[in-house]
Image (cartoon, rainbow, N blue to C red; front, side):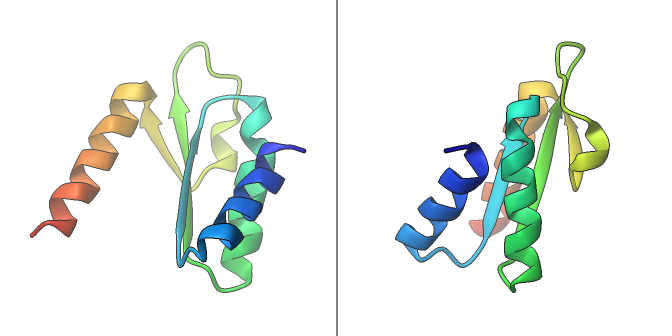
Amino acid sequence: MDKGAALTGLLAERDARSVMFCGDDLGDLPAFAAVRALRAAGTPGLSVCSASPESALPQKEADLVVDGPDGVAALLTAIADRITR
């Protein structure tokens, strides 16, 4: 089991209509690949790299790069703000 399989299974279990996955390490690459595969199959999806000096995740693998955990929090806050309008 890897994060890609877990993410795909969770989305199927929840009958999700879209997905966003945030990661910062090489172990997140399978989940990023799962987001790409889901998107190719018609499920809207976004992969986000939480970049930091400690991050080993290649930024080119992500659809969006933010500045570490604070960047992820800011992104989620911005999304929540847009939803509540």
